[in-house]
Image (tube, rainbow, N blue to C red; front, side):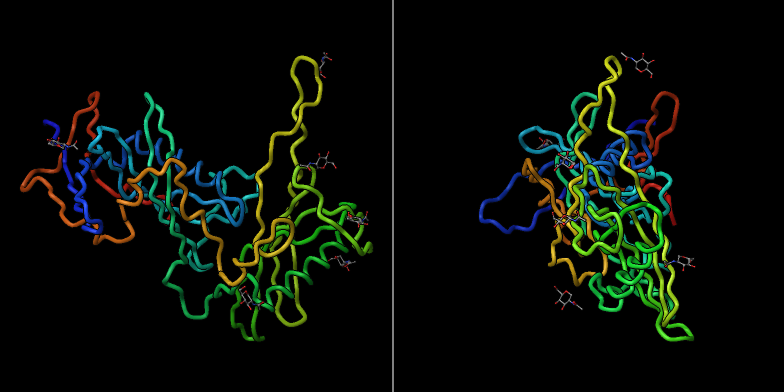
Length: 341
Ligand SMILES: *[C@@H]1O[C@H](CO)[C@@H](O)[C@H](O)[C@H]1NC(C)=O
Ligand SMILES: *[C@@H]1O[C@H](CO)[C@@H](O)[C@H](O)[C@H]1NC(C)=O
Ligand SMILES: *[C@@H]1O[C@H](CO)[C@@H](O)[C@H](O)[C@H]1NC(C)=O
Ligand SMILES: *[C@@H]1O[C@H](CO)[C@@H](O)[C@H](O)[C@H]1NC(C)=O
Ligand SMILES: *[C@@H]1O[C@H](CO)[C@@H](O)[C@H](O)[C@H]1NC(C)=O
Ligand SMILES: *[C@@H]1O[C@H](CO)[C@@H](O)[C@H](O)[C@H]1NC(C)=O
């Protein structure tokens, strides 16, 4: 069967006075190895930019397009759906082993448009924009997310951290780095709160010292704690992430300088605290990243379907199929199947 390119023509709302040339847009298959490679690269890149909150996992590829601009340059555009995992950005657990948060815990979803260029066989991320939201369908009686600076949540976090500091044998006192999430649920005994938070080691060796300053990120031990409390009941558990040993020169056995660590900016406490994020219920991915001012991102607007004015698909054509090395590839069948839910 011969390849039929499905061409979609984007119409742009006439905002500016000058009429723009329309770029050609070709829909590419979402199930292809090329789409998988491009989306994996985009996921790693966006996670690499994420300096707070949790790591994200890819749920599905919603669209994969090749855009040929009037000047002949080609840009690939991926529309991706991510889900927040339970692994904090400091958690060294490899992403494939990080569990996606189930709906009952209020899943966080991010829709990202990613512009990529291709050099030979290699994709490069040129720009992206992301919109992060909480899942809408929540059940009656399920835990509800609270703002990250919720007063009861903050009390639970501090009380549980004080308890943890008195009760571990790590010869150090930890302070709060950032609150990851806070939820509350109405149970028979009243309100039950749950919180997750990241901690950082200080220069104090015991919680009995009063002036403790966080160590710098390169040398500090970090940790991630889960706590819950209701009335007088409280429990807390923290995973401590030990920094990897410094690299060693394979020839001389000399210790090399440690690679630069992720520059964290904590939203709810600790070094790099940015108070304006306080009242949100969840951490958002970087919303916009476009160092090369790739105009295709501002032109594409997958969040507002209305910007696609005209969609020309070859009428009464059978599903487009191409032969690639004896393997049938469905063309432009999007979205690619769901991975997580
Ligand atoms: C778009 O495709 C049409 C038909 O293939 C071609 O004539 C036109 O030059 C293309 N425009 C651009 C900007 O590449
Ligand atoms: C440490 O935890 C154990 C077990 O939960 C508890 O029995 C003990 O009282 C705790 N110690 C302190 C100092 O909080
Ligand atoms: C920790 O560092 C702070 C600031 O440098 C200092 O004031 C404090 O005395 C130190 N605490 C300990 C226990 O060394
Ligand atoms: C972090 O602290 C260590 C030990 O105190 C020091 O050698 C290193 O230069 C510090 N790094 C930064 C980035 O401040
Ligand atoms: C480096 O360490 C390895 C393993 O400890 C040892 O076998 C080797 O002789 C060392 N090389 C040098 C140059 O010290
Ligand atoms: C949470 O943060 C918002 C924005 O900074 C602030 O208006 C609000 O008073 C804070 N709430 C609490 C309980 O601190």
